[in-house]
Image (cartoon, rainbow, N blue to C red; front, side):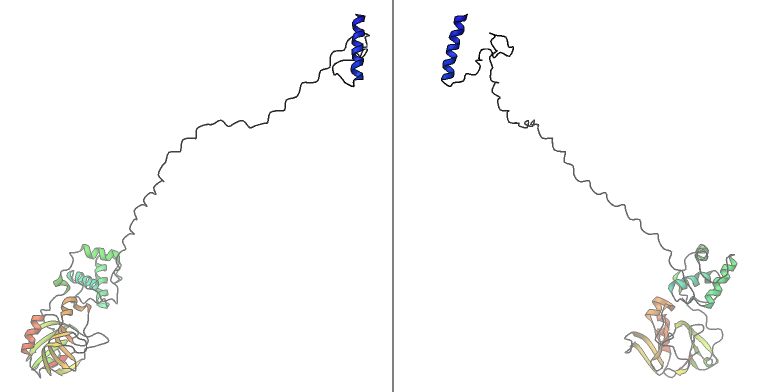
Length: 298
C-alpha cells in the first residue's frame, strides 16, 4: 500500500510540473472529512445542461370547421292587413236655401202625403219648411222645419220613392184666377206664381203648360207685350243654345221649348226667356199663335 501511494504521489508531481490540472484528482489530506489517508470522492462536473427546447405553442388541434348554418330565406314581410274602408258618411240632407234634385224629392214625398200643397219646385224655401214642420208635428217629432236623419227616415218609410211623374208633374188645370188682362182677346197668360202658361182665347183656357223663368241675374220681364217674331228653329246668337218654337215678345226674351227644362226641371233657369218643357204642347202653340197676339207676364 505504501509503495502504491508513493507511485501515485510521484505521478501527481509530474503532472503539476507539467502545468496540467486534472479535475477530479484530489491532493492527499484534502478530504472533507479530515481523516488522514481517505480519498475524497471524485468531483464530477455537472452534466451539461441541455438548452431548454424552444417553447412552442402547442399546435392547435385541427378540428373540422363547424358546418355552415342552414341557409334560410330572409323572413318575408307579412302582407299589411287589408285596409278597412272608412265608414260611409251619411250624405248631406237638403236644407233651407238650397235648390237641388234632393229638395225636389223631399217635396214630392211631402206632396204625396198631403203636406206640400203645390208642385215640387226643387227649391227649399218657407213653403217647404212649413210643410216639413207639419209632417214632423203629425209624426210626433219636433216641428223644426229642418230635415234631420230621423225625419228623413220617417218620410222614406211612409211610402215608395217618388216617380218621375211625381217629381215633374204635368199641369192639368189652369190658374184659378188669371190676370184680368188675359180675359179678353188672344193672350199668352204667363203666371210666375203658378209657373204656368195658359193659352186663352176670349177668356177661355185652350191649353196650359209648365214654364220656368230667368234667374235673379237674368230675370224675365213682367208686363204686357205682343208677339213680334216667330222662329221655329231658332238658335240664340248670344248663348249659342237652341230655342225651338220661339215666340219673341220683349227684345231677346221669348216663349220657347227648352231641352234643359225637360231634363232637369226647375233645378235650372233660363236667361230671361219663358221655357216650356212639353215639346208637343209648345209646337202646337207655335202653330196657333199669330204675330201681334198678347203676352201677359205677371
